[in-house]
Length: 323
Ligand SMILES: NC(=O)c1ccc[n+]([C@@H]2O[C@H](COP(=O)([O-])OP(=O)(O)OC[C@H]3O[C@@H](n4cnc5c(N)ncnc54)[C@H](O)[C@@H]3O)[C@@H](O)[C@H]2O)c1
Image (cartoon, rainbow, N blue to C red):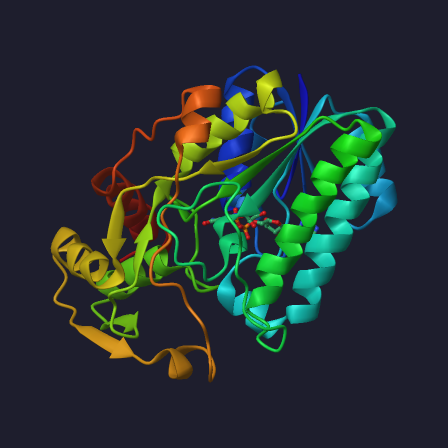
């Protein structure tokens, strides 16, 4: 198969490219290198079946060429990360909405099979546990730009389902929960690499608020496998599917576990949300995926637990930072 991965130089995209190449496919990665990097594609670039195109997703000529040449498109390019979204709210909305709209219009021309990566952020601050794909969503007010990421991704989902219904585009939407592993950076507010980096540098681990907010961390290896299987599953067409690991941990316990696993002498300091982000920042206490739909459709069952994930991330951060 000829595969196109938008955002292929990013954290998840680079793992996806590697896995597709290992499966014998031809792979093109399109990326503007805004948060991704060529270093992520080091393993891929050795392979003659791999092509890298440096372009903005909204460059119609470049995207058009790569979509026309593809049998299947995995759409991962997006402005990602809480901090980036607070710093560049307009860019977030434009990248996520205009880019996806263009991609879906191009995919409609040849009815190219397309997978859109969305996010558990679309569930907003709903207090339901666990989150199921057809649950109601509750977003904060438009004056809090944090919610623009969720809203932009939600619009992508609407547009994908509408393109399927109205134009026959074979789409599937993967709603990813926190996905972690090697190559994720802490620069844009990703909690796990940030805390691991602090532990390895023997700095205090900064935990926002009381730290009793919990998260579920899914391994990039499990997620990438599921993204490939979803694309190959006709029954998934037109569906929204949660992907994540329901194993839950509070951020405070995560910080403690990182200190123990790394053998660090670091302490833990609590930083109020208003100080870490800005006044009135809203966060969710819990965010747990219901993965029964993914299990039913593709037999999805996460194989990597938090211990395995931590090992991967610690090794990666160590090698990247010489700590
Ligand atoms: N990592 C997670 O926990 C998580 C959770 C939910 C959803 N997602 C989704 O998964 C996808 C991949 O996220 P990631 O964690 O790998 O982040 P990432 O930032 O590493 O990857 C995004 C990639 O898109 C590229 N990009 C951004 N704007 C672009 C543009 N205008 N044109 C071309 N390329 C552009 C970036 O350079 C980067 O390589 C995103 O769509 C994100 O919303 C990720």
